[in-house]
Length: 253
Image 1 (cartoon, rainbow, N blue to C red):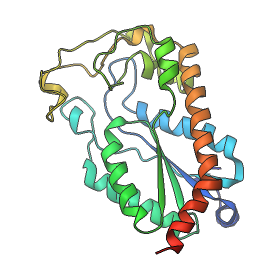
Image 2 (image 1 turned 60 degrees about the vertical axis):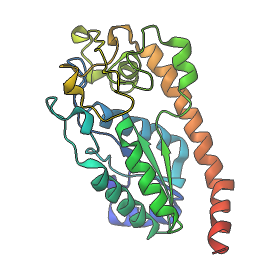
Image 3 (image 1 turned 30 degrees about the vertical axis):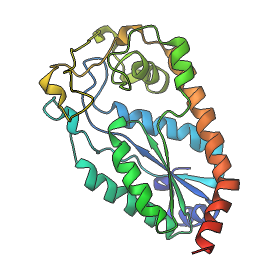
Image 4 (image 1 turned 120 degrees about the vertical axis):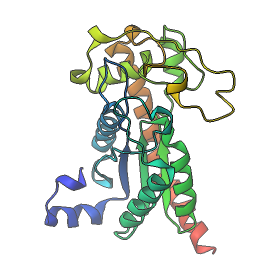
């Protein structure tokens, strides 16, 4: 249930029943010529909607956070970067707001890998206050990707406008994909890329890492389904055993 779509009476009732808040988190950044700048927001919001549907009244979805940490792509057209500190502060504030309604668990549904540091920092701050911030970024999808990805990976650990992310978009937001514009792009990464911060503009003039032409809706649906099953299992575990463990930890303080 989307909290922001409810009226005041409906919101009061929903807040009393909910056990967890779902917070989609994306970014505004370029994804080549075949995907929109809004790609990460669309993926986070639509995947979150599927979780919400499965979880029913025990979950409330919040509006997507559209702006985040995009330091690496600053300089590419359309990238908007608010930095880690602002994003961390926003995540902490939103989770605290939900805790004030008695909802002490917020799950971040993240579709932008550049947000990991801010999520971790927020989670640690909130834990000290007895508030849980869970984080999911296509959890469990790796096995399906290994089975179905045809193209070479541009750089280990990176997924950006490639076969995988474009497949996710074809499954979740196909009306925003222009496959006629898709083209492979494999930039040459600097030798020290893994060991120091380097903006992508220093080695690439195009914000694609890999080959999106190999993407398909079928692959994307398989990726989404695996991530959905994994994320739901984790959330349901937390709402039973995990939440009980958190309460015991707080009681011992």
